[in-house]
Length: 420
Image 1 (tube, rainbow, N blue to C red):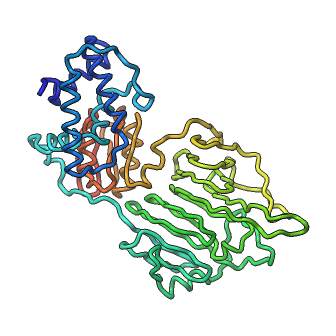
Image 2: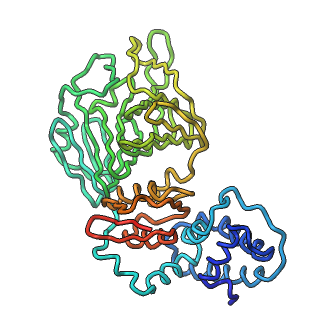
C-alpha cells in the first residue's frame, strides 16, 4: 500500500494542502480524495462488515490507480469546500472504511482511555405528558404517542392508560397565548405538554394527523380539544421536526372549504403553516432557526398575534420561506433568511452532522443529548468541525471522533472538560 495511505502522512499532506505548499501531485491527490468523499458522504453509520470491506477495497483500488498519476486539479463539490484537515478525516468518519480504522487507531493510542473515568450512554426514548398538574412518564420502550379524539395510545397502538385518557379529557383555565375558540365557543380545554428531558427524544401524532418529533430538552404544548379548534396552534420550546397535515374547514356563509392554518409559537417567533415539512430549533438563549424542507411557511418575529373576529382567517406580515431556505431570528427580533443548513434535520435520523461548525455549537448539541455539562477551564477553543457522529454512540466514541480538532476532552461524571 502506498505510503500516503498511513494516517500521519495523510494528515501531513492535508496540512500542506491547506497552507498552499502542496506539490501539484499532492494537490491533485487531495482533490480526488475529497471527490471520493463526495461520492460516499451519504453513507449511514454504522456500516455493516460487508460494506466496510467493499469500501476498503474500493478505496485501496482508487489509491493504487490515482496516487502517482498526474491529474488535472479539479474543483471540489460545493458539499466539500475548503474545509481543512478536520473536514477530511471527519468526512471519512461519515461513511468510508477509514471510519472504522480511525477509531481503532484512537483506541490503541497509549493512555487514550485515561480521560474516560465514567463513560456516558447516549440518549433514548424519554418523555413525560403533563396536564393540569398531573404527569405521566411515558414508556422508554416506545418511540411516540398518538392522540385520538378521546384516547391516547403509543404509536404501535398500545393504549397508554386510563390516567392518560383522563389527561386528554381534563379541563383547566390555561390557554396558549393566541388561541381562539371554535365555533361553539369552547374554552374549557386543557393544555397538554409533551416534554423530553436532556438525553431524551419522542414523537407525537396530533389529532389532525400532524406528526411532530421532539429533540432532547424540548416540549410541545397543545390543546386537548385541538381537533375542534379552527386554528391549530401549538407552542414549541427546544427543537421539533414537523410534518403538518392539510386540513380544511367546512363550507360556511357561502364560502367553500378553506385550508386551516397551523401555527407554531416559540419565544420570539410565530410560524404559520398550511401543510409542509419543516424544523424549528428554539432553545432558550439561542437564535431561533426555522428550516423549510417542503411547502411554505410565514415566519413572524414577534409572538403576540392580533385577534380576529373571523376565526378561520389569520393575516401575517411575516417573511415567507421557500423550500431549502432557513430563517434565523435573533434577540433583536431581526429575521435573516438564507440557504437551509442540510444538517439541520440529521438528529431526526439519529445522527449529528456538522459543516464547519464551531466547537461551542458542537458541544451544545452533545451536552443536550448526553445530558452533561461542558466545562472550558481556559476558555472556549476557536476550533471548527465538519463530519458526522452516530447518536447511538457513547460519549467517549463521539469525543474520539472530535479529537481530530486540536482539543482535549476529559469525562468526569456528568461533565466533559474541554481544553487545548
